[in-house]
Image (cartoon, rainbow, N blue to C red):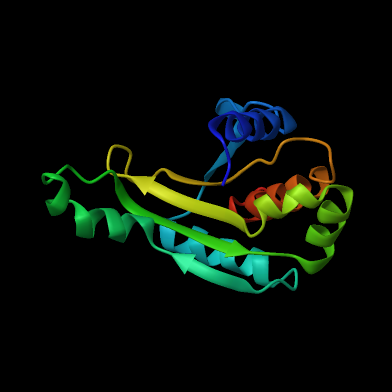
Length: 152
């Protein structure tokens, strides 16, 4: 197999390909609507652009369901869901620019409302590192999130 030295070299090489992420790696916008409306608007913003939602996940329910297994920790979210999808056109362009961009597909958009701030709904996505064919993906995701947040 691989030696520890070769694995360390691979990890270092991969780590230098993408810039370090900070707080700005996640784009979040406050939405001015109830959670149910925001999540419907988020799905519509994806579908109305001609994309197919591959999966819809309910993170909030999973955390509630497993709270007992983790020592009955308090609920973090009133609601928390995500959608994943991919774009043949935009993804292809990004992967033609750099085949390693396969790591970013599918794209994930989320919306949540915390227990600590009920009524405050956030919608967002994890921003891809700039350049290398990823800027168009970020623009697409930001447009969808802005629409779902009611900024259009």
